[in-house]
Image (cartoon, rainbow, N blue to C red):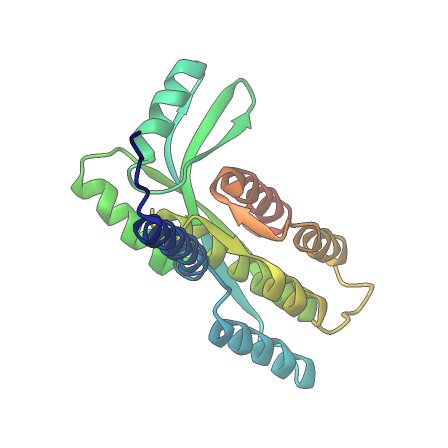
Length: 234
């Protein structure tokens, strides 16, 4: 009669090894998820938030200094055919997050909206790479607290969406932006642009918990329409 011998000790050790491997893999997955959230889904920089909040607070305590603030939409081209629009957007994707605006029977393709310094940088890059471009300038006449808050909210939103030009940025949490926006002081209800300010605040409040790349075009279009409403250079 033959007997089959089982090495119970060896089997037990093998089971323990598999268990430890599973534990290590699970721990690595959890750690990777946490690191991913920290690196690729950046939180709103608190230093910027504090600066913006302080700017608004100071403007509540004293008369707002009247000034013109410039925003520049950098355009790649204007086309009648959808095929050309898509080709232009593909070209500009190598330099930013392009969006399109319908203008009559044509479509404008922009690479982004920037302050003067940001626009100079992207235009220089496009010129270096022989990419045709032009610019559309919007001037916001900051004459009261209402205009100042509109300008600061636009600045904050642009700082978020322009970060997406960095391919490492996958998403952006909006909690701090919403909180900051909700804490802005009430302005004179008779202000010229009060309806625009209320529209902008409502838009920020309606943002999802996290903005992802597929929502950047929507954000640019919203800022573009706001700037069209408040610009002084008709």
